[in-house]
Length: 480
Image (cartoon, rainbow, N blue to C red):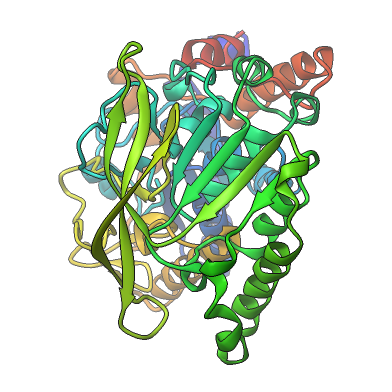
């Protein structure tokens, strides 16, 4: 019998002696067995698992819809940010814990339901993130080459769902709507030299398209002013130091900023100081490529051109700000401005998809209603990451949110709020269910085979890794 010939049912039977020994060990120590399932193998899932595994009787099974783990670290973090991706080493160590198991290619709501997981485990943690795009709801949004930044990021990061995006980069100018870190990411990728990107794990079709790209100017437009930008100083500094790329900032946009610097929190003050310094010493006219920040503009409509209907401009409503505080309201003045472009990207955030009818959802806030990660009205069900907080913050924020949820779960188990005295079937029950539905999960060892293939192929091309771009390819390598 080979490993490849083992069905999920046979694997679960092989694991039974180990699980029985663990249970007997914990019983002798007076420690209750705690079986936890986590849905989503991104940062929130692994950080939550890290906390739950501190309970000596806990076993954690992480289910993921794709055959590969790591979520936004793999498909969201920019390819030229390898230092951020180093966190996968921590996640790998968590996955290799003998009390932790990864099951990829298992989709909540399709292959398994929340009700199934609640019956099989003492606790369920939902960490499947917010990977749906938001729409502006304005005329022309369906024009060719009007794309969401989410799809554009997925395209250059090799997400299987976005392999066919194929943006037209033959034009000179791109407009990005939004002033967040993702907006700066897509601008930086558009303006970076192919030689710089060659050293990253960017998807090969995207790299080939960027080699042919004619984009030389990227304009990032936000509805509020410089004081309200959402990007962080690290991403801003990267843009200002991008080789061969100039920065365009209009002095009139910063007229009131200097007077308010003293009253700002230190992180925001440092960010605005860098913007002011850049505005004073910019020399964009000396560069072949440039990026620009525009403020107080809200998109009103996308304009199509005569050539195949591709977007040719974006019309903006000019705003003024009303109200005090960190989020003043952007109010239209009645004036408009039109910016010509041949590519338009919406970078206005992400939303969560409802994957199971039993999961409550607050549409107004875009989250699963919860208190410190405990899902309201569903005892034993928890959430962390963006389904808990909304799609905000950087990786550290996700880590802290997930730690809070994991600690709350362990606290509930130790205080008797979870039915740990009940002997739940855990993965043995779920694997049997999946086998009956003709679903074969991908284990972490099989993911390591995919990872080895991608690293080998990347080395052949002079890159750190070359990602597989389809689920079929992933499954073929995993099961080879």
